[in-house]
Length: 321
Length: 303
Image (cartoon, rainbow over all chains, first blue to last red; front, side, top):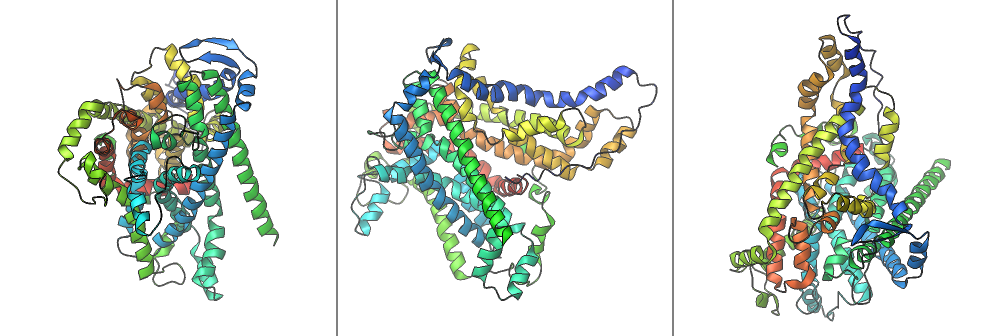
C-alpha cells in the first residue's frame, strides 16, 4: 500500500487568544480535538479493536453458542483439536487453491482491461461504469445467480459447453469444477474494480517516461512492459495484498453455491471462513471458531509479509541493475 | 439515503488528482494518447457483456416459471411471470421487511459513518494535539484487518447486551470505518487551506463553529463519495448480518441466504428475490455510477 500520507506543513501557532477569554476556554481548546475523535474511537475500540484482540483470548477457552457467558479454560486445546481435524487441513488447502484460481486470472484480466480503458475512445465513462457494475451486487445475489447458471442439468453454462461438444460438468460435486465455480463468482465481482484501481495507477505514471521510451523506438508492447508495469508496481502490490486478504476470508460464495455450511458433500470447496462458521454457528463451538479466526489472522500476516518481502527484493534487484 | 447522495454535483473525482493525470490530455503526444482500435473496442464490449449478462439472466429467470428454466434448449428471453414471482417471494421470504430493514440499517450506517469520519478526519488533518501520530497509525494499521476475524467476541458482546436479532447489532459495528477516517483526512488535507482556518480563528470563531461553517461545506463532495461507498458496502454486507440476525428480522442479504438455503425450490422465485434485493443498489449505481467510479479511483490514488 502506498500511503501517500502527505504531512501538512505545521500550521503557525494560533494567534494568542484575547485576554478576556478565560483559562477554562483555553483548556477546552486544547481538549477539543479529542472531542472530534471521540465518536469514532469509542465505536472503534468497542466494536473493532476489542473484538479483534479478544479473539485470541476466547480461543483459549471452551465457549458454547448457547451459553456465550460461560467460559471454561482449555489452554491450547482448541488448537490441538483444530490441527487434528482433517477438515481443517482440507479447508486450508481449498482456501489456497480457490485463492489462486480466483486472484490470478482476476488481476491479470484487470490489468489488460485497465490498459484498454486508458485509451482515448468514445463512451469511456460508460465503459468504466459498466465494468464496475458487478461490484454493485452483493455476494449473496451474485452467487445465487451463478449457482443457477452453473446448474448441472439445466444450467446455461453446461448448455453452452454442450454446443461446443463438451459433456455436462458437475459444478457442485467435482472438486476442481466446484472450486472453479466459486472462483468465477469472485472473478466476476472484482475484475472491474481492480481494473479501475490499475487505471488510476496508470494515469499517475509521468507522461515523460512514455515520451522518452517512444523516442528510443520502443513499441507499444515494450512500453507496456518497461514503463507501465514498473510504474504500477506499488498498485499491483496493493491489489495483490487486498485480494489475498479477501481470498483468505472467502465465505459467502462457497456458502451459497449450494446453501450448505459444509462446502459440498465431501467438503470439496469448504473454505476457512466457512469452516469457522460451521464450527461456531453449525456446531456451537465458539471457542474453536475463535481459534480458527486467529489462525486466519496469522495466515494473513504471513501472506502479506511474504508479498511485501518479494516486492521489496524485486525492486532492490531492479535498482541494483 | 438520498440525503448524502443528492449533494454530489461537483464531480468530486477531480478534486484530488495529481498533476500527472491531466497530462494525458495533451494534443497528439507520443505514447499515451493512443486511440482505441477496433480490437480494443471489441474486447471491451465483450467485457461489458460479461459484466452485464448475469443481470440480464436474473431478469429472464425471474420472469419465467420454474418449468421454463428446466427446458432444453434454455429460454433466453424474459417471460410473463415477473409480478407473480415477486408476489411469491414477498410472501415466502418476507423480502418486503428485509428491504425496509436494509434501508434502515444502510441509511443509519451511512449517516453515522460519514459524520464520525468527517469529525475524526478533520481532527487528524487540521488540529494539533498530543498522540495524533500514534492514533492515526492505529487507525491506518487496522484498515487492512478484516472485521470478520473479530466476529466471535462481537457476537458474545451483543449476546451479553441482548441485541441478537435486533438491528442495532448490525448498525453500531457497521459505523466503524478506519478507511473512512483516512479518506476524509486525505480529502481535507488536500482541499481545506490552513489559511481559512487561521482567518476564522483570528475572527474569534470556535473550533465547533469552524467545523460546521467552513469544514463541512468544503468536505461535502468527499462526504458524498464516502457516503455512496459506505451505503453500497452496508447494503451488501453479508457475514455479520447472517450471524447477528435471523429470518424473523432479516436484512436483504440474510433473506437471500435464507432463499439460497434450500427451503424455497422454485428457481424463478429465488431469482425474483435476488432481483428485488439488488434493484436498490443498482438504482444508486445507475444514478451515481460516475461518482462511484471517481471515488474508487481517487481512493486508489490516495490509498
